Amino acid sequence: MSQKPPPKQFIKTAITGTKSTILISSAKGGVGKSTVAVNLAFALQNLGLKIGILDADVYGPSLTKLLDLKEKPKSQDGKAMSPVEKYNAQCMSMGLLVDEQTPMIWRGPMVISAIRTMTQKVLWKERDVIIIDMPPGTGDTQLTFAQEIKVDGAIIVSTPQDLALLDVKRGIQMFDKTGVKILGLIDNMSFFKGDDGKKYKIFGESGVEKTAKEFNKQFLGYLPLHQDLRNSADIGDPLTHSHPDHEVSKLFIEIAKKIMASLN
Ligand SMILES: Nc1ncnc2c1ncn2[C@@H]1O[C@H](COP(=O)(O)OP(=O)(O)OP(=O)(O)O)[C@@H](O)[C@H]1O
Ligand SMILES: [Mg+2]
Image (tube, rainbow, N blue to C red; front, side, top):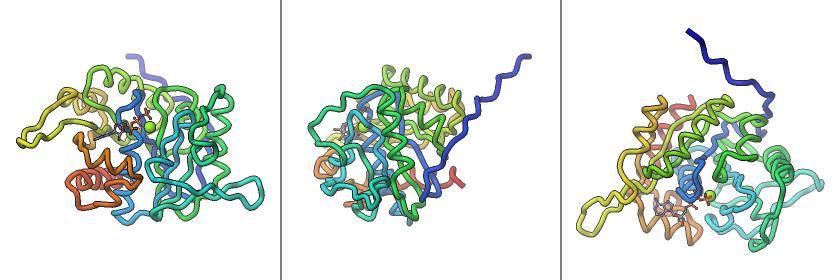
């Protein structure tokens, strides 16, 4: 019987100033990666962890909006930058460095260089974990993280729709091939609870959990489509930070506990 070759080994640089680094990923766009990334980060803060959030979406940064960041990162020596602080989280995003409405018309090598800068030239301090909000796809940013940066694991977010799951499968295989551990899969926008108390499964049912089983990965949980989650994102104060007792925040905290357990 032929054996699978081990994943190719790369020399990887750890992000200094943090104990753990976690990627929040999905090959598909618009499934809620950024929303899940910030809410998970504050769920981990709720559990007592010191958090950092790095927005690795160079073309479409969203952290400045999600956390209502106004300050610019400062540099003492013109080489390294200090992250911006908000709600006791250290934050970095391309959105802090360029005007919000300026489109990033960059080729791949410039994106790779931006990722290197944000991971190696930012003075992250005393963090337990840095949550990295990834752009959609399996492109330059994903490859740079997988090959050059020491990460403790990736979490894949998806809606339970067939169209999204196809991309999830591609994402799983990319991480498996590059030797990045997948900590688990999250089913976002799983259902909408109407005023009648009924759960409406708009994007289908259990697709993410089934995919997790198929690829032998941990399934981390279901998150509903909820207006409070969208509202809190739009006002720049994540639900798990502003309302940690909210029913949806509690789901994030349960997922955060599973993530902490799989890091140990
Ligand atoms: N569970 C949810 N309930 C309600 N709204 C949600 C939920 N998850 C995400 N959203 C909303 O859906 C939209 C897309 O979410 P988000 O920007 O987090 O997705 P993304 O995967 O990061 O997108 P991109 O691929 O463009 O980076 C946003 O308006 C967000 O507020
Ligand atoms: Mg995003």
